[in-house]
Image 1 (cartoon, helix red, strand yellow):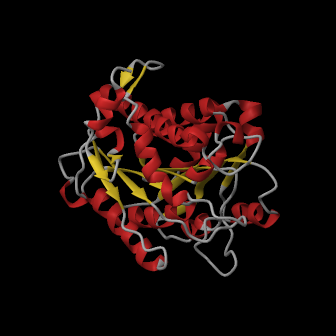
Image 2: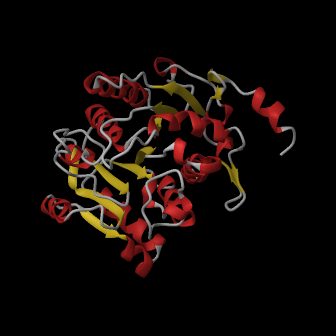
Length: 323
């Protein structure tokens, strides 16, 4: 690794001791046009906690950036360096007011809107999964046509409300399905499993025509076939596909800093799926959410999140290199 301390100390700093992601330039969202292909944002939002204790996921954008200081853009598995083909910029964190959801979500929409209007791919780290709704809303309001969704998660996250909150982390894909710019029949829930789901959530998904590809589908058919099907469904009748990842799509053994859900994907399976999706021309945005740094020994899940984005980026780089 060479002199890691010296290398890390030379990286651009966003705040405190937090570097930009991969040491890429900080660029204000309004200055992105012509300067980047991919724009990174952090969204340190922690809304209603739905399983009885504080999670600390608002801290994750910082710990993920710190983890990224170790890494290049090169994956020897594919023989490709993403940074040879893609220009990355870090736009810093969206300004969040934990006491004001409307104000915070409006700030998220503004940030993502600026990125999309600049013709740049938005890649976002949360925060809890509620942030996917304002991200997707901003994209649909600035693009023509309909959007499809590939949603990696253990849970449907489509409850109508939780304890009176219609924007809790277990509700975003009910709100997303209600957006006029989203084709609900092109929404795919991939990796669904376990007893923290409810019959009513599965019934709602079926009622709007969404597709469920459970963990059993992955085990029976393999990750390649399942992700290919998810992308195919999300592409039907749409003009773009958005990819969103909750960390608990992974088995808890691979995700110690996330929700403790067993029987999930391996990191190999998640990364292979993201690499494939990165290769697809119509994939137009990405987020990864629900990492809890206070529960993450050695920052394992924060490093996992860096690798996840890298696999998507390498897929995107391969697509660009083949043009």
